[in-house]
Image (tube, rainbow over all chains, first blue to last red; front, top):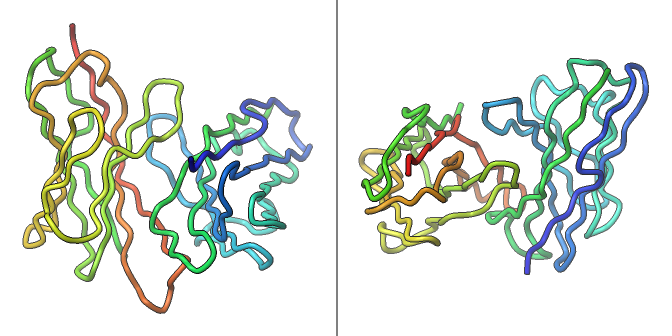
Amino acid sequence: GAVVSQHPSWVICKSGTSVKIECRSLDFQATTMFWYRQFPKQSLMLMATSNEGSKATYEQGVEKDKFLINHASLTLSTLTVTSAHPEDSSFYICSAGGTSGRSSYEQYFGPGTRLTVT
Amino acid sequence: AQSVSQHNHHVILSEAASLELGCNYSYGGTVNLFWYVQYPGQHLQLLLKYFSGDPLVKGIKGFEAEFIKSKFSFNLRKPSVQWSDTAEYFCAVIRIVISNFGNEKLTFGTGTRLTIIP
């Protein structure tokens, strides 16, 4: 149980275009989903926390208008990188946690999406 | 701000050697503690976690960790490593704040790369 998927696993896009990454909890309902960014050989940096049906909470320094997050259902959250630039190239990882009425102490991670902007 | 420190950047061991990876955190309140592993090309997997109770927790694949509250530490150990343990290891902490129930955020350490030589 507690499987989280991400799609696509790998994407290349041209500078200036937008890319959407999906994160799904396959066998449980997640009230909270998290989006992380991981640079090569570095740790995961939390970008934002999204709760189903409400606006995402972004970490300091993360541009809300550039990284659009939508958490429309208890099993799906999307991250859209708008007007992508080469510096947005990174590994994006989502995690899901917290079924209804429970804390998000335990997070289950997706396999990640590698974004390369040319 | 809360921080998590992993002092060992890269550890190289021979098979059958004993392992201890350090993890220290800065938050003085109630915390939940985790160790995650990321095998090459794979997603993050939970090795073990500490919520409360016995400070010595056992996880998967023969790993264990000890929570020492007075030292703000949660070191990971394994008595005899195998080549297949080659991976990146991340310590992570959630600070428990009742008012933020359901939106707890994981703070990750910078990671320790473990290389096991056959």
